[in-house]
Image (cartoon, rainbow, N blue to C red; front, side, top):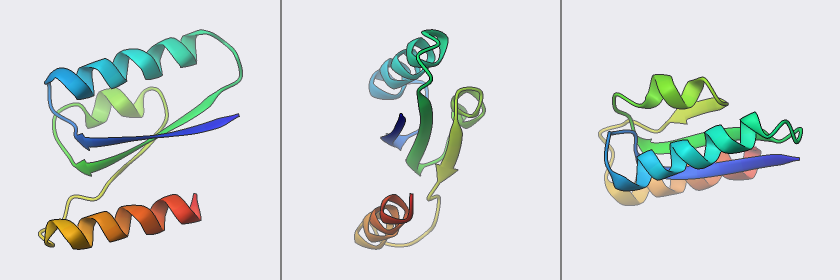
Length: 78
């Protein structure tokens, strides 16, 4: 099974840290789950997310609406 997680930014704060815990637990459960992470903005946690699945960062200077559309296209292609 494949699971795509979306995160608003890859920094050491509440939601990204919680997501990292979930992704790590899924990978360590050995249930054959493939985890991928799609981040709206990068940050210091990108490397840690990459340990547990393919990690893509939409780190552009585009307006937020354009970033969202790019993320949706990436999800569609996933």
